[in-house]
Image (cartoon, rainbow, N blue to C red; front, side):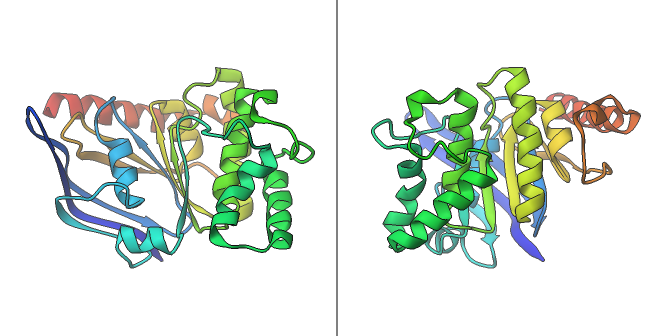
Length: 257
């Protein structure tokens, strides 16, 4: 089942210095349950494309559908949860209060809010931290709370904009493992922006390689790795081969520029 479909997608920003083309002729199909990583150099349009899916940017050409709707219609129907680069938790709200915020806005009953907070805290392994404040948690735990907030209203799509980029490698590895387990348990369709080749290969069923601006797709790599992936799979010949293809795609994008 196709969840996200982009055909000939273009996006040009109008600036004081003239037009800037951020995306050009982007064609991509994302199916239900896919874990799709977007990788490319800084400024290539990875986040811009994610924001187009979320209805936060408006394409200037081509078509884009989310669950068969326009991105704006999908946003209004709460089809996705969005996790930003920074956790973005309100410091005056507890962790439970931050997770409840979208539920309060959507009008869920207090009883349902409590159930959903407890469920999502358990999903991200933060049970018992509901009454803590963000400043009392580590950076990795804050990002898990941010993921819980995005999961709280149970949207089928989870959009993640480089959520682990600012974390150290040890914490990042741990959260990568936890994210794979969460994806396996929930069956969400995930769009994930990253600058890390190992992270993209480890997490994804499909890796979308993008060129320097204007952002174009230079390769779409279907992963042959098994769904269950211990960290040491990164030492396997199969993993190294996929990582090499991603690297070659990135290099080809620069040569074509």
